[in-house]
Length: 173
Image (cartoon, rainbow, N blue to C red; front, side, top):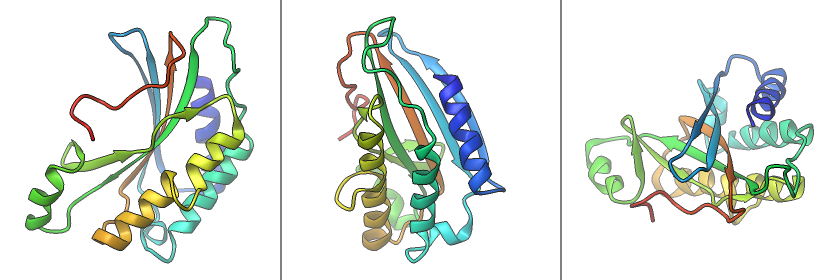
């Protein structure tokens, strides 16, 4: 998982310089494993309604070289992929309004896509670029409805020992 995330980090770095990226992984109490690529220091152009398409295009291009996980891993289970966005409120009134809608992380609010199979390159591209679901739709909606640009983008891979699609964290809608 870490090798795939580091390869993705390298692919993104070749397409866009100046990003602050990090990879980390976790073994959860239920036996599942999470790996996450966090992308910070997004170019200002990517944080505008007119320019966030460049963010999506860069991510999509990086995933074209990505080698998907096997549909039936040797150790059993299954790999899943999801995308997340962290964004911040623009004023004090929004803090209270957004508090109930999104998971909080260090002062920023976070939203993520449903996990999609990580063994299919097509499924990952759809989760990234679809106009009605996925990362592109979520960023567009946050910008149009709330005027909130992304601050951090996350790519998350999850391995579940039973092969079942992971759910939301406790308390998330």
